[in-house]
Length: 283
Image (cartoon, rainbow, N blue to C red; front, side, top):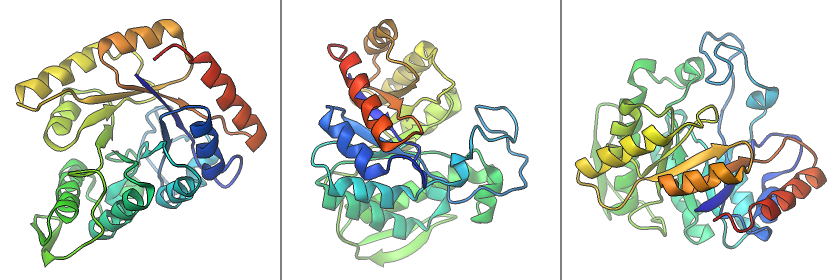
């Protein structure tokens, strides 16, 4: 079982390059960052953690661009995986986003982990022209179109929301056929059906810790659909509880990801070092 770290990047506290370097030096396997382009002031969308329009903290309105952040992290590391938990592809043009991700994978030597979400903030999505009721359909088309650009010498795609004629687009990602795609969403049968069709694994939500039945259902749906191997499961955890870690490992969880606190660079680096010590022998 692997261990990762997630930094809710903002314009304060430790920066992504500093955090990723500290994470790699301490032996962590992956480094994740989130995405929000902006937060509309007037909202009715419920946040998954608070249950209403209230935000857990003000970092949501101060979030750094994830791909710039991961580019900075790539420049100062050599081994650690560089992921999003989660990115919001619907807030981008899929052709240019495919170029950005392929470039990062190329320049980092094949280290991108593409964690994606449907987007809980409907007002944010609406500002990008995304029909809220069609989020899953649009995301599926985006990923299919991006996959064509990543894998075909002359790529073309014809969908309801994305279309382009035969085109050349390099670089291709180092990882073949593409970087792994993980979906961060609640563990429902609808989510798992989407993952089985269009992705490679599941990132749990921070409020979701009892995941046994979800992992079992995802694995069954994966096998029933004829997909080989096992779906990747990443758990977002608050504390390195040894009993929980052993249980998740036995359940088939591939990775556990811990959050770096929103604090100064020195304090964040000290936390990363302490956490690495606590996790020794837990893989």
